[in-house]
Length: 134
Image (tube, rainbow, N blue to C red; front, side):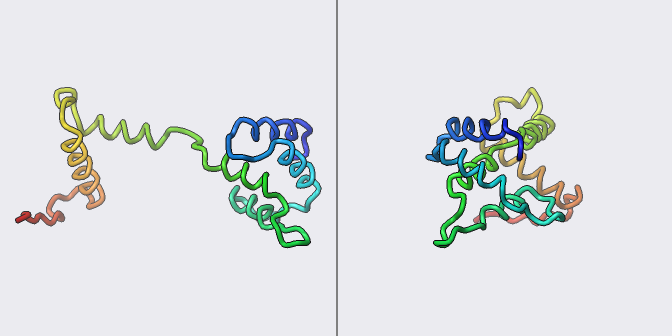
């Protein structure tokens, strides 16, 4: 946080992420934030770390770092990987074979739902409750 490259990085990030945060103001807030006392030593979660700073207010009771708060929250919502998506494709590939690639979306969704329900019930189909729609 005290690295001089971080100042330029914050400004570049604010320019690239179109959230309405001013890069100059975010950069100034970053410089000010670096002088603050950090959160407690036992905080290990990143959201708790940033919430410490997001909760700081000025003498008027306004957020002390409004532009930086917008920027950090926007960055924290970005996906850090594609594991969930890849897992979904992998699961679909196990359930739907090559000969079934032309199934409709509705049928594929139904198969995935049955697979997930079966897995949640310990792989025991006797735990399923079947009802006939009238």
